[in-house]
Length: 92
Image (cartoon, rainbow, N blue to C red; front, side, top):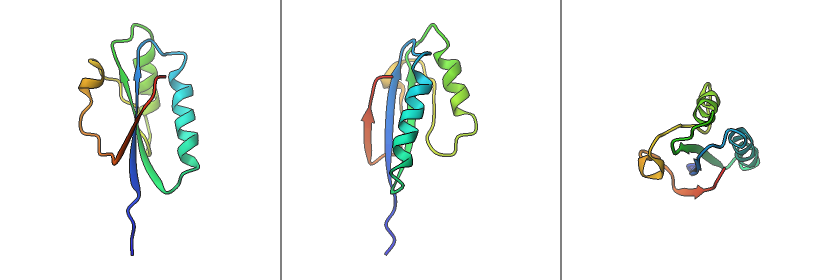
């Protein structure tokens, strides 16, 4: 019997988090590397940062195969289309 891997969405709202965004990405990636029974998507929500947060998130998104970095304006209400069975939120 085939069991589908469960998908977990990790949503991280950001506001001026240029100093933390990469560290948060790496921490979540490290955790899921130890949990091969799960698939995940990492969604960063940029809520109008005035620093380099959105630029850093776009850099992280380039070439990703597992997980995602997304810079959005408008905060949590803007997030749509995630396909999770479980969702966790965390500040950057």
